[in-house]
Length: 144
Image (cartoon, rainbow, N blue to C red):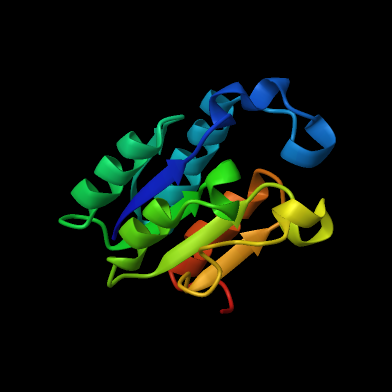
């Protein structure tokens, strides 16, 4: 299965964000782990990150033609971007909404997700290992 892993705004500076919430690693280190986990699970992964909403939508539209699964950490777009939601809603394949921190246990404004009702699975609060859990879910190796 081919999988798009799409990370949204500010994840390019992951290494500068609060390590207690975000794991204390860089985006490059996270992507290296994702690629290694994917190989172990027999998945083909393409990792992308953008701070630009239109670019994220373009990447999602492109993936409609090739992806058998989507892992998306929309960052701040989680809470308000109906444009991202509309692009994700087009997927007829499993969609895993993934967050490094537990957004349900954070500030009030972070607790709302425009994707929560269209994602087929959600992973939150597991730090970088949450991406492993998301990949395992797509590979059929994790409980729903």
